[in-house]
Structure formats: C-alpha cells, structure tokens
Amino acid sequence: MPKCFLCPRKCGANRPEKRGICGADTLRLGRAAPHFYEEPPVSGKNGSGTIFFSGCPLSCVFCQNHELSDGCFGQAVSVRKLADIMLALQDQGCHNINLVSPTPYVADIIKALDLAKLKIPVVYNTSGYERVQTLEALEGYVDIYLPDLKYVSPELAEKYSGAPDYPSVAAEAIAEMIRRRGGCEYDGNGMMKRGVIVRHLVLPSHKDESIATLKYLSDNYDKSRFLLSLMSQYVPDFKADKYPEINRKLTKLEYRRVSEYAESLGFDGFFQEFSSQSSDYTPPFDLTGII
Image (cartoon, rainbow, N blue to C red):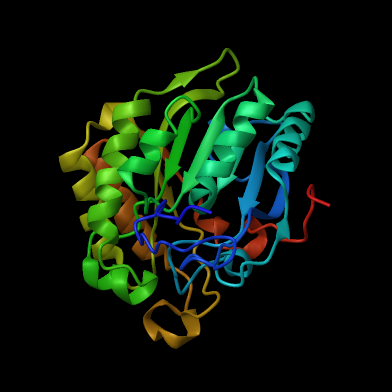
C-alpha cells in the first residue's frame, strides 16, 4: 500500500497496516443519512445526503464529533459500498452528497464517485486543514466546498487543535477552494449547485479571535466569491472541561459583537440563531445508512 500524505500532517502511514495520525486505517464510516442542519441552500427541504467519515487530521479539544474524530468509531466499508451509499442517498431525494471530514479517504472517495456517477452536487465538508495538492486531485469531483476557518492565531490553533500551522494551511486551502469553485450558482429551487461557504464557529472567551478571523477573511478574499456562515452552536464537549475559558456556552453579548462586526464588513451569508446552542445539531453516530 502507498504511504499516506493526503493531509497536512504528511505522516506517511502505510495504511491500512498502520493507522495515520488522523486515526484512519481502512475506509470507515460512522453515519450516512439526510441531514437538515446545514446552511439553507445545502440542506433544503429534503436534506443533505451526509456521510460522516471516521478519523480527523486535527485534534480539536471541543469536537462534537469526537466519537468519530478521536475514537475513530465506524464501520469499515468497500469503495463499492461507499458508492452504493451515495446512490441510496441520491435516490432518497437528498439535494447533494455531503462528505464530512473526508480528507483521509480522498483516494477512495474519488474511486467511489467514479463508480456512482452522481446526478447531484458533491459537498466537501472540511475543517479547512487541507493540502492544496489534495484539493487539486479533487478537481472535477467536488462542486461545493464547505470549509471552516477556525482561528488565525497559531497559539490558539496549537492549544485547541494541536496544529500551530492551521491558520496558514487553512488560509492557503480556502484560497484554492475559492479559486476553483468561487462564485455561487443555484438551481431553480435555490439549492446550491456550485460555490464556497466558509464557516466560523465563535468560541466563548474568544470574540477578539473571531473578529480577527473575520477581518482576515475580508482583507484577503473577494467577498463576492464566497458566503460566510457565522456559527453560534458551540457547546462544551469532549475535553473542553480541561480549558475553563471554553468550558461554557457562548454569551449573547459575545455573539452579538462578532455578528455586528461581520455585518459591518459586508459579508453575504448566514448568521446562525443564538438558540442553536444545543447538542441536538450533532446526530447520533450509530451506523445509520451503513449497515
């Protein structure tokens, strides 16, 4: 088996014999089902056909999907099975196929997409911690990029995600995504066919970091080429109790100040309702749609 250099860790793991830093060995999924809590032009009324992959190149201490990202829970599947799951979601009427944390499996995903020959868009739903070379390999396979930009501070990126290079890596990756798929296009029902939506989750005690992140986005990218999704849904989870400053929910004042700043910069996109601070947005990882 070839060594894996798909993510910025470039650990060279000889998968599946040896797990990578991301925790991945073989192609492994935790859930595949319609999901209704993405941005409106992604979820629509029928839902986004969301496939959750196991493992993650980051190690975010507040991850709400930690059973998958850290525990690498999931069912091993073949490439053919992955293609069949995509087709089943398409047959259910989902508006798109939404690949969540797909980076460790890009080579298998490309093979599955070649088999499936989908008639609906493909969404690449990522932390933003991506190699440009991996994005280049996805040309012709991905229609919508849905990356995070979590931080612009290397210190916070190291503290909370174990990746001090996250800001520079994500900035380059998002620039590449916008270059390839920037400029949103919609079908007759208002569903996104092509585009980039950059997400930012506001963390408690860190409104200044959020403001700096939004300023970076505004200063360095053409705002007409992507949408912003400002998120308030943070709830303390996983290892957040070891970090007192984030071991609480966001306050209304924190979110209001960040959202007002985003508005002042003229971003187009989505501002999540403050009432979204709930674990209800995280689906159960129970192998739905896989077994």
